[in-house]
Length: 360
Image (tube, rainbow, N blue to C red):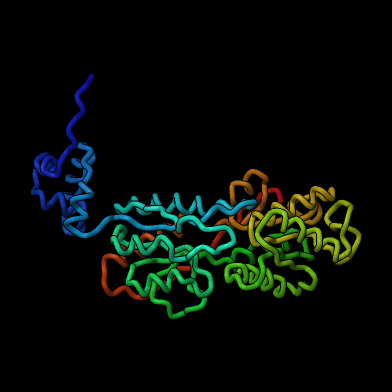
């Protein structure tokens, strides 16, 4: 058996590169201080020797853990929502590029019938300084996480706008949901649909209200009526299917085929949804009624979801795709600036989603 090779040390790198130990340290922690040729030489030796900095020693010296905390909520049952998985992977990769790791934690168990404590899990990490900063993903109206972390003086950035506080002092990154839904509505309109229904979430969700605004704006710009063409339901497949059934029935729909959705003149010929979960429910109802689904009004019903989940990709569902990779990079850039300066101006980044066009 081969004897395991002793891990390379900072001194080994310095000797091989012909520089001081401080120069190697600068190459890792403060590369801007070095000349490009020196930095390139040191990095080449680091790669050659497979040198990994001693994180424990670094934390004692710099009081930095190089960890970013991200709380994960419970999985959403009966939904097609996989956006958080894609976001977490993107965040881990973006953080790794700047020498940080992501520490995932939960808020702990919640008794049946009780609401989870939005600050559970944060306090222990704040008190122990186990992480350098947090990424907060729940930015609903009056979110106590942002309020609580601000009061505790804990650095954080948010994936989501501070909906109820335009003067918020923390950096944030968000996706323009209204723009994405507007593009989806424009898409089905260009394909000949005029009775375009909206299936969204109950009022009070700022994200849901924002997405609905995109549908309403597009319909208004084209002079199309929205009366009797919208439903607000919980984000489950069954709720999406029930909403589609109610809209088809209320507007004269029912059994039948083609793009009309039934015999009534007011029947919707297309559905734009606040999520892929709701869109999957719509597809199930259309299939049960024997209604064709196609790319244009001449081919059949139109259906568009939101999030471009793996389910949407498998089913061939047209869906609004959030630029989660860009979101992660922007969040890490904001964190880097926040941790590197004591005077960071509040800033927000609003990114535009794209439309993944498929058979529906």
